[in-house]
Amino acid sequence: MYRYFSEIFSGLWSLIVGMRITLVEFFKPNITLHYPHQTVKMPARYRGHIELIADEEGKPRCVVCGMCEKACPSGCITLEGEKPEGSKKKVLTSYKLDFTKCSLCGSCVDSCNFGAVEYSKEYNLASTRKEDYHFDLLKRLEDRHS
Ligand code: SF4
Ligand code: SF4
Image (cartoon, rainbow, N blue to C red; front, side, top):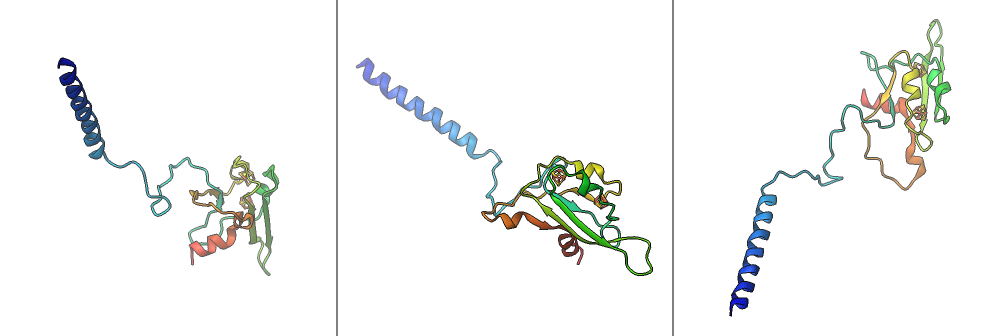
């Protein structure tokens, strides 16, 4: 008889403990997101692929010195520029990044004395196609400022 009631009590107690945990967790704030419908703001130190930075007029700050291209140990960066007639300065005409080879080492960012290239906060880049990781960074900058 004693055993019978002891088992009932033990089962009820276990139910109460379980329900208490469920209730506590139910009212806690959510810490998960419905990815990819919801996205999170990345922390300041997050390193996404590099991105060109614009000046106040929305033009690239890049002066086509080529230091980032030389500094990249993986050969990810290919850039081109030209001198418009009557101008002493070169203008950036193409800046391509092959992100499939990038190790996010930061040499390109560190080598730029003009603050013209920075890490982006991009992380939502899942794809099965290699071509999706070949970025035209000049076009991306133009699109952002058009
Ligand atoms: S180091 Fe800076 S300024 Fe020079 S080519 Fe690269 S991004 Fe442009
Ligand atoms: S982060 Fe490193 S590997 Fe990636 S593009 Fe810059 S220099 Fe090249």
